[in-house]
Length: 294
Image 1 (cartoon, rainbow, N blue to C red):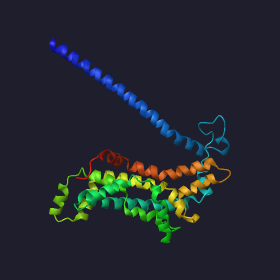
Image 2 (tube, one colour):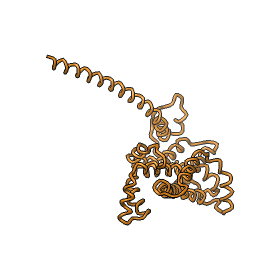
Image 3 (cartoon, rainbow, N blue to C red):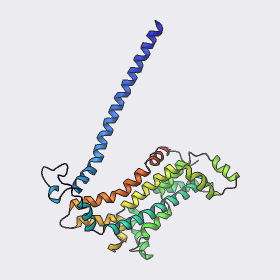
Image 4 (cartoon, rainbow, N blue to C red):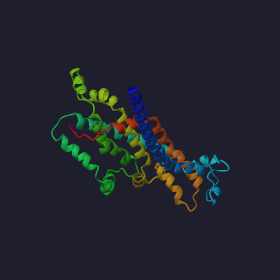
């Protein structure tokens, strides 16, 4: 009898805990659902406008879905501006900047995080401190520098700085690799490996989550940059897609269905890259701790 009473009590406690967790899960699900709707609604509205005729866009009350699907908007939207040439320009700049930022940040991060040399912590403090400076602080002197170098109306002011390291990515790489024991480095050195071999064959494969995270952030920043191309590029044949899309709104009459159709195509590279690297991206964000240099 005592055993059966104990079993009943345990079952009651288990049921209480299950009900408690069920309520928490329900509340969490509802919060995530509301947040998802708030995030997805603008995208769904863009798709709706992109598929509508021009006369349906400003209809009151609005139609929440198009009565007729105007798929030709995607063709006309790319023909209104020099879409595919500017798309290629943006893709070239984004790929070059991504390679430059990731490679340089990994090299700098390895030097600051794994090598011992005088002033290492001071340089690390400079890198972290530079994150506090807004980008507009150096805009004017850097502009004059590039003008004096003869780089105006070229892609060099957009690409070359990417190969000089990125403080945020360097910090992420240092923090991620701080969780990797240095015994791997020591074992590799016993086998005769140099620093570049240790970095390439040991740390890089083990740091793929944070590297993929850096790639996604770097590509997103380079693909969406608007101010720098607007300042340094005067020739329309060298425009990036962000500037070309902004030219839609500079006319007296804006074909919003064409603009939304072109904008959806503009978003595709980022969506594709995110879904391809989503697994590593989530691991990379979750694995970076708050430890400093050791």
